[in-house]
Amino acid sequence: MDWDFTENIAFKALYDAFKDSEETSALEFLSSDGASYYLELLQDAAGEGLDLGDNEMMEELKEEIIEYLEKN
Image (cartoon, rainbow, N blue to C red):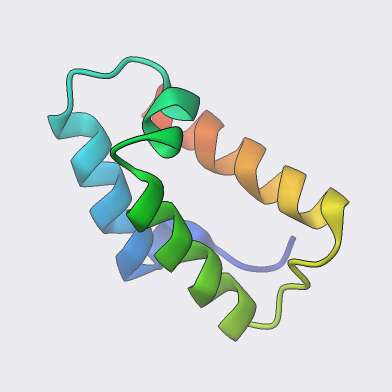
C-alpha cells in the first residue's frame, strides 16, 4: 500500500479518540465509538486513489490501522 495513513487528519483524530477511550481492542473501537472516524479515513483513502472495492486492499488497510493503534 502506497498511502501513509498516519499523516491523515482523520487518522490522527481516530488515534487520539482511541487513546482517550477505555477500549483496549482497536477492532472493538472501530466497530463502536471509532466507526465515524474510520469511515472518514476510508473516504480519504478512496480520495487518495486506493481501490476500496478490492477486498485484499481493504483488509490490508484495516489490519495496518489496527496494528498501529494497538502498538503505538
